[in-house]
Figure 1 (cartoon, rainbow, N blue to C red):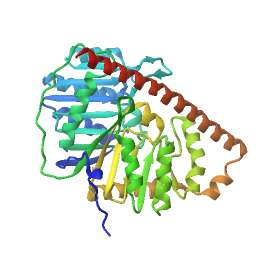
Figure 2 (figure 1 turned 30 degrees about the vertical axis):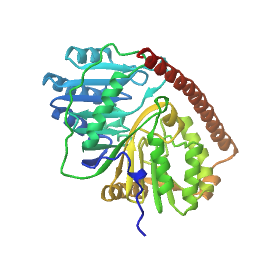
Figure 3 (figure 1 turned 180 degrees about the horizontal axis):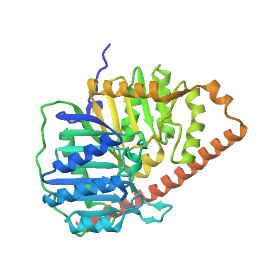
Length: 408
């Protein structure tokens, strides 16, 4: 029997869009340079990490070319993750007329930060074409020096969803930190580009401090409404209590749930915590697959061959409560089926299934202790982060209230 689509499930979607799944590595950086080189009026680039390595210089050169064409360019980088970016590169941008700004946490050092981090990775040109995903501007995300890029994906969109990305980037630029922006730039107002293709796309944001939890709700919707199958590809996979409840409910309905994680990680403690989660996944009849080729950094999910999401959101409490994240959801059976088939191909050709018998046989008491300890440490870290952000949210609400009162 066909599934009835409720109005709530369809809320927030735009219809006139053209989409393409972009692979990490050469595909992504070729596409980003093509976007920049095709810009005519405006360009927003906002990302978590921007390194002045070979890949960073490639993107920087494209930005300077666009500035030479008098494109209005706005670059916003996270003040913690990109703090080592060459000051010479920044000065070169400014000299060329590129508008540059940091998204500042409250406090930062080389090793830690306090305050929201801007974790999304977005580029949008002329309010007509945009791309968002989990890929930063750095050699490790590119196919460079004979090394394979980390596994990641992005969504390229043309049409109404790109116009929405343009508006979001303008809003982020003017609200990059608590202090009021004395220079309120007037962004060029461009009409939406409406392609002939029709594809339902919605832009989703998570910024819990500012009252946004749309991506978290998208994942809840997926587990609530899936009828047959779900595939989640996720780095740093440590779902919180609420999402775990909906995962269990889906599994009890007979939904086949496949989780793809990395066999290696750039964050050792996260990897140990994930392995500790395997016990819970096994108990609830969910399948676990470890990607073997390189570091898995993607954040992608699909269900029933009708819907998919991709972006910067990791399935854990840091993305849910402590970071500014952006995903795009696509509700289109043809596109979602292609993405599902690609994920199945990754499972078939590049993953090893972790089965309970083999897993428990290879994990002795000392390793189990390390995994449990890592998981508990991460829980404490998440608690401290979310406690701090609850306070920051209350502070932000108070500040906003005072501003409203001052305006009368």
